[in-house]
Length: 390
Image (cartoon, rainbow, N blue to C red; front, side, top):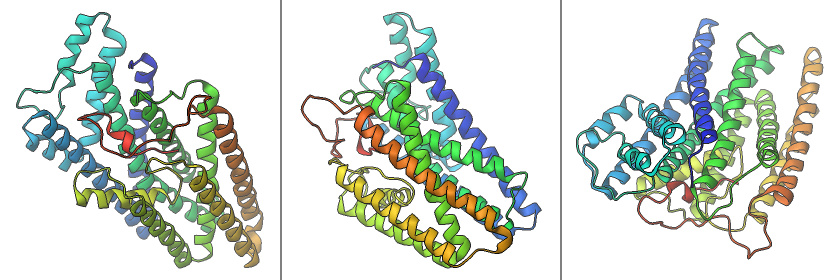
């Protein structure tokens, strides 16, 4: 388990996308208020604040759990940092600092021993760590995995909803504004990157998992997630354009279904009951947009059921939309969106099949294993192993 130069480059790119996403949020919000679209501006700010609050909450609780396991103190500093929304920036700073040292500067065992002094809890600035010596590469990889999971939470809680607003405004006007195209592209890039980065970080952090190596598997996985997401977000936006209340009801039904599924699986990701409830709420929300396995089991049947339902609902939305006849002046525009939705869905399902039949790392003639177990692991074993996106 080594933190390589390529891993560092991926981490840098992820941090840049995170900053770009924040700048985009400010730009989109200001643009909405400038145009007098105050409702959309307020909604965008609300989505950003809710997502940031949830992510900071998980980040602080993870720092707290790690500190309790290692006997560290000084959590007041960490709490203050997270209250001012600095938890993710702090994690990125220390991950980049330690990752750079491991990837570029450490050439001997003595160097690696020196780096272990940097692997203390970054928010514990008042007392030394009593944590037992650990492999610094494994420590950084686990921290990067934590970061990728937090980013995954954020993009689905915030960027996906912001993207829906942008698409709704685009469909209302029938033409793309100056700020809409960059906002839509950056949101799609942030969601796609976070999804693939999470999957790569997950397998990198689990020693019993095969790595997602090679360009073709990563590209196929990216296309599968990106195309199915684009198809679904466009179809839901069309339905919302037809009737806002019906669109919200559809999202609510899928959200409640996702929460119910997480409760049925009896997830045990968090140590506290309140955080576990919050985790299941977040899980249910992400299930609106993409499939993942929240507990160790064979995903063949749940995934087949999920995407079968996705195809049926998308087909139903398109049929209802065209039955109600869009305005004549916008028919060409909506016809193009319909074609994109159908093609993206078909290609996404095709990429899914190709990925799981040809490129999935678990495909092996050795004995069959489940995707992942959602049980307790030894202290500070990779936290991300409790949450396996497929």
